[in-house]
Length: 191
Length: 179
Image: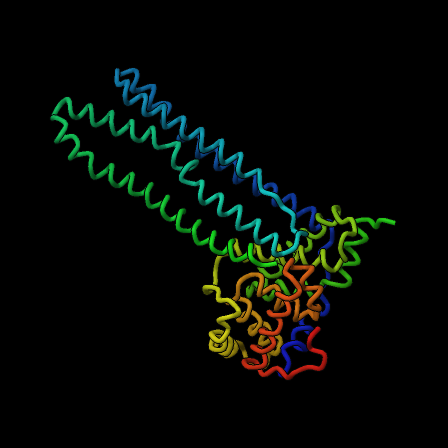
């Protein structure tokens, strides 16, 4: 049992040394490779979704389903918009670790707050026109066969699930952003 | 004459390597991960020193980089119990004693680390930074310069920390403890 936290604390790790600069160069290179791999994966996933919906759109035109094709192309445009935003936002992080800790925390919270608030706009928003168009196109097609009431009854559950997920993601982000704003306001009052 | 970044890095290593090792171990329990965090601090410092123009003391620069890297690490990990402020510090006694008991007996270093982890794990980032800098023996003015808090705000926190430590960790009052 220690009788002095202060004395005990300063006795820890007396022989520690700094990493060699060459280790830091290796670490930086490793980090860059990791980011590169992550970017490649993100773009690959985006490209697959892009290609699937583009092919779907071409197929829909071929069979005369122009409304479905428009929905597929709107989703393709949404994927492109999200990929562009990912690239833009991923490269805009400032890294100044030498600033005072309070300012560093404020910056961290401001960035997180801005990201959370804007997620519905740039991550969900671009997909909405395509999804809405898709439901309208499918609904119109089904309605031609069995009438609008039966078509709407059939689409209600999947549409509610789709838009419910979007709403839940937007709400979770909004709540997290609100919590961060309170923390940020407390930090703004300090110093 | 302006010193090279490599020379500053060497000087910083000679003076602050143990402090940064302690900081890393305080925020990360896993030995391997703590070592990795320590190296992350070194490397952030190494690359930042190219921007060092002498506007502040080397010590201030080193501590800012290390604590900001640690804060980013904690924020990214997003683990541990919910934070309480120093105003609600009484809740820490149970937490500290529980953590102390879980540590293997006979390892004074582990016990100290466990106590410090229990403290800083339950506090907001800035309060934790003040505690860790105070443990390193930094003055209120130096802590204020490193953190960006006012000297008054730092002194209030240090006073609360000392009261809390005296109550819950049975730390004897030390002469000239107001540094």
